[in-house]
Amino acid sequence: MTDDVLLVHGGNPLEGEIRVRGAKNLVPKAMVAALLGQGPSRLRNVPDIRDVKVVRGLLQLHGVTVRTGDEDGELILDPSHVESANVADIDAHAGSSRIPILFCGPLLHRLGHAFIPGLGGCDIGGRPVDFHFEVLRQFGATIEKHPQGTYLVAQQRLRGTRIELPYPSVGATEQVLLTAVLAEGVTELRNAAIEPEIVDLICVLQKMGAIITLGTDRTILITGVDELGGYNHRALPDRLEAASWACAALATKGDIYVRGARQLEMMTFLNTFRKVGGDFEVDDEGIRFWHSGGELKAIALETDVHPGFQTDWQQPLVVALTQATGLSIVHETVYESRLGFTGALNQMGAHIQLYSECLGATPCRFGARNFQHSAVVSGPSKLIGSELVIPDLRGGFSYLIAALAAEGTSTVHGIDLINRGYENFMDKLRDLGAHVELPGELPAVAAGEPSGELVDA
Image (tube, rainbow, N blue to C red; front, side, top):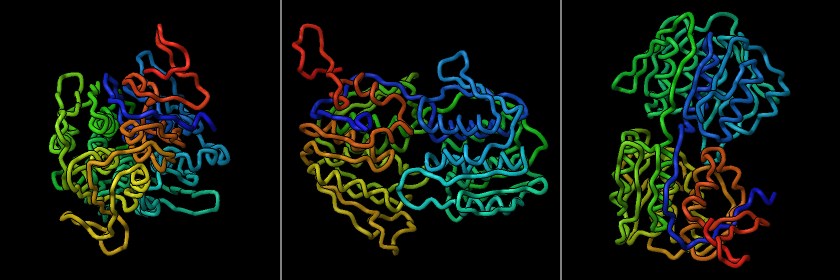
């Protein structure tokens, strides 16, 4: 498909302003939460991304009315007539997203049963769904696995339970929250994820009538209630997308104002951005990121769960580190396969060596398991345009950054995957002066310039 390929003519700084809206890691989950209510919910600051469309389709299959509101980026979700969906229709969504697993708890509460198709998502390491099902068993659900998917049944009201996560998984924490709020009794969740998107989901559920206590030691107590109402909520901005654009400014020696970005959720990233040699300025409407003009500095970096350096920030920053002077060390502790994208960067001229050893002090699950989860980046490197195939969402956007920083033209395949989490990224690239075009697309021509020459869109 030619519309899934992008030609990127690199070597120019990205300059200008773009806007980020609600977080990809919150908005689809808040949409699922609307299933729990007895009345309509209003969700604002919703981005136009594929994950939102997938969840909207699944909700509508189950009888939820979803319509756009009067405000730009607003959805009204009315679950007054929740019903069972056709298995074949649900299965049509198989492989398009991992969000369907979070429908389990709400559907068990509303209907007493649920069907979950096979799941997709980015191939960046193990994200087993069996733990989700085990959690639901602890709440009292009966689970049967079939070739076409998994069937879940609640013979009676689900019951609160005590759960300790072996790792503070975001998805598992979301599953427990969405199930426990209507379960009978108290649920205690230990070693929970506490990412800003989790806290925002807790805010959504509390607005609906849930009773949730967030402790200081990664413990969450949820007291089940008999009924929940709707909510009116503005989603927190996408800190992961904001950081991606910041890294693009750094790698291309550019200057980007990210309207909607907020300092509080990005403090760890901002500290690292400054250590590398980038600069930023915060105001009430967003954050301006720019290359300070000097040499970028090599750093030692370890990813970790919040409040550590987020794994989704790692890939775009690694591209910027290829332009830093010296040896940078990156230790990925969240996903064992997230550094696989670096092979293509080496093809472009980067010097990145992967190691299975833990090159850092943060406790890591992968040290003795032979996964190449540490990297040494030697720079600065001159990147050259190349043929690139997008492997996953963040790696894909990182390839775009590399292509924009490189000399010459890159052909980037699989760009549709980027639509999962980056709203209108093509328009944003052009707004920042990027030289990009779809194959067969006539390049934009500025007034007074001869046709056939590629100019800024």
